[in-house]
Every structure is written in structure tokens, then in C-alpha cells.
Length: 387
Ligand SMILES: *Cc1c(COP(=O)(O)O)cnc(C)c1O
Image (cartoon, rainbow, N blue to C red; front, side, top):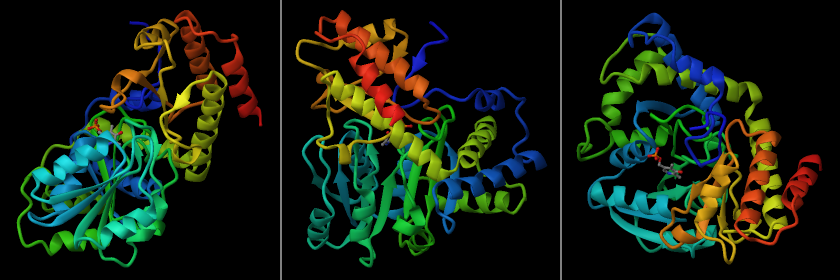
């Protein structure tokens, strides 16, 4: 394996060396004063990154799917109705989790590459007394960014709890949890948050905590139960040791470094940088004749590009791109699996990464037999970066 390969997949992403150094430090006791201070700081930082000053953060060892399951396990009781605003593979997964925890699930689906609108959501809400609605901020299988602000607006005043899957969005796409009124925002460490895989992260509104307190039935998972984790997180936030299950101490130390870098950049600048890098990629894709899976620029995520393979080019393209030094991902959505590929562009992404990636894709397409004027994609990206 070439250690200088550029990793451009939608998670795990390329990580900052300072974050990786934190992982290799000797593990501390999870009840040492130093680690308690780190954990307390991480909880404050996570609130700031999610623009959720009122929220209760949770940092638990596990992947993004655990963060999804924690939200569902705590906020849904058997027999309740749940609505999945479905934009792809990860929305389907949310539906599976809801069913597993006893909810009666309805999907509000859009065609592949599209997203349900706020009007469609308002209409769907009149059909049943939903307890929760789930949204996928960026569905990594389609590259679609749902219009979460407008969708959350449609839920305002209805009393329905909202769960927003931000696994491929948090700390890359604009999201203002308190202002926009989301009850749960959840993510994982390995995408735009910039820490190797292994942490499930959630920020939970006071309203959702209250709904959890009012449950009539116990949470059906011990590990996922807010009731087990809340005292631990409250203790760490107050500078006291506590134990339920051993935290991933090295990952939490790395998270403190990464969240510190994110906040030092500033959320507004970070959102803007992701927008600008994505715009340069989209200019390059258009110039090379590559078609996005999302049906409009408006719906296209800033954290990754999902692209259709051009006529006459097959999945061998991915190997060719890797031969050119860049790793991209294959298709994931069942309807697109063999006919699409995905390029992640989140976290520490720079103009240098954009140009290296576009150049590698361009050379690989030419080597696959596509008629392309060498440099058209790179030139379009340069123009976008300079404008
Ligand atoms: C990656 C991803 C997940 C799943 O996260 P894992 O860490 O792989 O469990 C969930 N939702 C979205 C939108 C994702 O991109």
C-alpha cells in the first residue's frame, strides 16, 4: 500500500497528523483528572460545533449506526408511528432500526437523487399521529442533501420529535441545531468530524430528553440507554469521575484535538470552505461531462459527490483512479450500485486535494477510453477556486 495515497471516500476521511498523534499517546485512566477534563471539554466543544448550546451531548464508543440506534431506542416506544423522510440507503437503515425498536414506520420517499419537500412533509404529517420524524442530512448513497432547515420548519409547533442523521454532514454542512429546532443531531467520528472510526456522537434537545423521561416502557437496549449514559456525561461535565462502560479514551483525546481545530477555523468559515471546494468539484465534473446523481445543484451535498459512470465506462474506473494515486468509493445505493461512484470531500479538504483528485479522475477516464481534452476538468476547478 502506498502511504501517500489520497483518501477521498465519504469516510473514513484523511485525518490531520495532530489528531493521529493524539491517538498514539499512552492511554490514560478513564477516571484520571486529565481525562475527565478532556471529556468535559469535548462535550462543550460538540455543543458549539452543532450550534446547539441547549443540547445534551453524548459521546459513546461505536459507529454512526450506534448513534442512529441510540436516538431511535430512546425516543420511540413500541407501537408509535414514525415517519422516515427517505433520501436513500441510510434513510432505509433508519427505517430498519425504527422497526426493530417496535415503531410503525411510514416512508416519505423521493425518486433517487431527489428529496421530499417541506410541503410533502406537511401533507404526510396529517395522515397519522407521528411521534418522530427522521431526516438524513446528507444521504451518502445518493449525495443528496435534504432541505433540512425547511423540513424542520414544517415540524415546528407539531410536537413531533425530529432525529437528523448528520453522519455525512456534521461539521461540514451548515446546521444550526437550536435555531432550526432539531431534537437529535447525530454523527460519527470518521467523516467531517475528522477522527478515525469508533465514536458515536449525539446532541439531544431538552425537549427530547424530557420525552425520554416520560417514556412508559423501558429502553430495550442497556448499552444505548440514555439512562445509563446521562449520569456519566453529567459527571464528566462537572469534573467528576463516573463509570458505566469504558470510554474509548484515545479516540476521545483525538476528538478533543479535532473539535479544537474545527472551532479554531470557525463554523461559518468551515461551512464556506466545504461549499467552495464542492463548487470547484462540481465545475470539474460538469466540464468532464460527468453527471451528478442529485437532480439539482441545490440538492447536491458539499461533503461528497455522487456521480453516474459515463456511457462506456464501468466500475474498472475506480481501480484506474487508484492507480493515479487517489482512492474514491464505488456506488452504494441499490439502484445505482454498478453505475455510480462517489468522491468524498470533507474535513481537512484543500484546493490541493481538489486538483489532485480531479486530475486523477481525468487521467483515469482518458485511460478508460473516454474522449476528453486533458486538463478541462482541472481548468474548470481552477477557475472555480479562483472566482
Ligand atoms: C456513514 C453513514 C452512516 C453509518 O455510519 P457507520 O459509522 O458506518 O455506522 C449513517 N448515516 C449516514 C448518512 C452515513 O453517511
